[in-house]
Every structure is written in C-alpha cells, then in structure tokens.
Length: 435
Figure (spheres, rainbow, N blue to C red):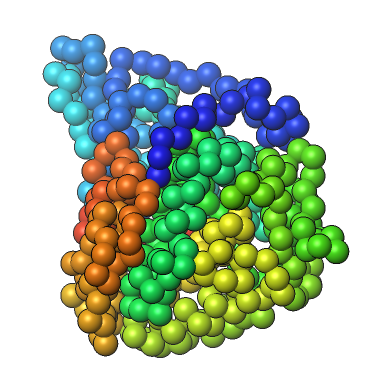
C-alpha cells in the first residue's frame, strides 16, 4: 500500500521510545566454516514461528572429511527452537547430522518451541556442535516471532510494535490504503458473507507485513476482548481514560501520541465496559469455540463476539465498519477475531479445504467467496459487485516460498499454519501450536 520509506529502527526518531526499548547488547556468535540457511537465506536476521521453516547446513571450506555435528538451541534463554529431519517427523530438541565434506547441503526443518517465543530481536538461535568434542563450531541467531496477547507484552515488545505502527500511520499514503480498503464502499465486499473471516485474515496479515518493513521484529498483538485488558487501555499503549470529548490519553513517550487520520490527530474511543475489570460486551471464548463443528455455524461469530467487540464502545470510529480502521485498536481487535478462528480450526482439526466443514461458501452467489476466488483489493478488480477502486496493490511477499501469493485467494489463507499443504502464511499465535 504505497512505498513506505521509514528507516527500520530509526533510533533518532523518539528518544523516549529508545529508552523504553532497553535494547540489549549484541551477543557475539561463533562463525565457523559453515553456511546455515533458514528459509533460503544464508545470512542476515532470521524470523520464524511455530510453523516449520526449511533449513540447510553445509561445510564451506571443502574438501575435507565428513563431519558429524549436533544442532542445538544457542542458549537456554530467549526464543527456543525444535528440529525435524523431515516435515512430518516428531519434534526433536537436538538434531544429529552428518555433513558431507564436499560441501553438499543437508536439509532439515526448524520451528519455534511452543510456549517459548522470543521477547527480543534475535534472542534465539541455533548452535552447530561437534558430535565428538561438543565444541561449538558455528552459530546463527534468529527470532521466534509470534503474535501475542497485547495485555501481557513486555514493555520492549509493546514499544517496538507501537513504533512501527506509528511510522506506518505517519506515512499517510501507506496507511490510507488500509482506510480505503475498509470504508463504506468496501463494506458489502468484506462483511456479512462467507469470506468475512478469510478476507480479514489477509487484511491483518497485510498490515503486519507492512509493519515489519519498519521493524522486522514487530508482530501484531491481539486484544482478547472477552478478558480485562488494563495494560492495553492505558496511556502507554492504546490510550488511557478518555477526556470529556472522548479523546484517549497517551504518554509523552508513546509513539501513538501523534496518531493522525484525515488530518486529525488523536483517537476518540469511549468504552462501555470497565477495561480494568472486565472484557467487552461479548460472547466469551469458550462459547465462541463451541458455536459449531462446521464453518457455516462458526462464521456466525461475525455478529458476536466480533460485532459486539466493535460496539462495546459508546463512541468513536471503532464502532462503525466504514470508520473502524481510523482507530489503532482495530487491527488488535481483528487479530483476536482471526486467533479465535485459528483456535476453532485447531480444536476441530479443520485445515483441509476439500472438507466443507473447514470452509463453505454455501448461500453465496458473489465472486470473492468461493475457495478459488481471488479477493479484492489484492486482485485489483473493480466494478460490478466489487468496490469501485482497489487500493493498496498486491499482498506483500516474503523472500522465500510461502502463502498467500500477491493476488490472494480464499483457499490461500485457510490452512495458514501449513498443516496440510507444507507451507504457511508465516504467522502464529501464542496459544495455537503447529502440532
């Protein structure tokens, strides 16, 4: 959605934010005569989730004898990983490999260890140890980057996200694309139809990838709207108690303090619930997950809890679909909607698209609901039953094979975790494991 020019982690942009981040010192790593590739990248910062990432390891100073090594976590703290020789194998805490002395790469898979995500950029990693001596021969850092409950983020996680979010908003043409994709013209295309959940999954993924253009370590957190979230509704995060005009308060170091939409700075949002002691006026998570054993029944969650989460506020743009993206809370709300769908899929083992219980467009006659249909606005199609404009362009792509493609279809986002198709959308939730 435009060309974001903000420099990643611009440490001169906000002194208070930089102090809040408390960026840890860089820990030296061991660089031996090896090439460890993660998702086709032999170097640079690496980011993984619970979903499996394809890796390879080879000797670079060949020829020499074959070498037996063991792959382990780089340390006991930070993001932790598991290994698999093949995609469908059981998880392993360590992985023995025999590296050919002629430099032929050996392939394997790595994923984040469920329950042990990163809290800082590149705080995890892989060590290559000599099987005979246990000496560390080589290391590579990585981050187990996971979408987390916004209410329990560390201050550094919160501030990295806020910094990236504010930078995207400050680049007005870039954020305008998100406003224009969820306005009055778009409403019939994205609500009250089977593709409501797939469309918003792609929409949430789109902005998360744009945030990662600013700071690669940023992941979109979710507002769990059936629980109290005092840390979310605070001056340090999404805004504290609103004033008499409904404008929420921000700390002087909060990057959102200059949040601007259509030339107006500030956020109007008045909750109709006590943010310190209760969730929104919504169906709780257990009831949501019990809505049904097939998609036709489950997608009724669009009304409650989704719609009720929006209307848990007495005033502000968040209460109405055409204006909701004007509030920075919007994407945290919809991240939770998507998480609930992901948890429902996990609970019922519904990932396989030929199974109508996984997804069904029954009752729809509009393009954009069938599994093979491309979704607006990423397909660029306008007119007819589609909105009159297609803002934002194609879905941003990763540097390695992954789903969804630039012109995303409904099918592309169903098995987001790669359970049945061997590749994924490369995002994960803190409470939705890969296996």
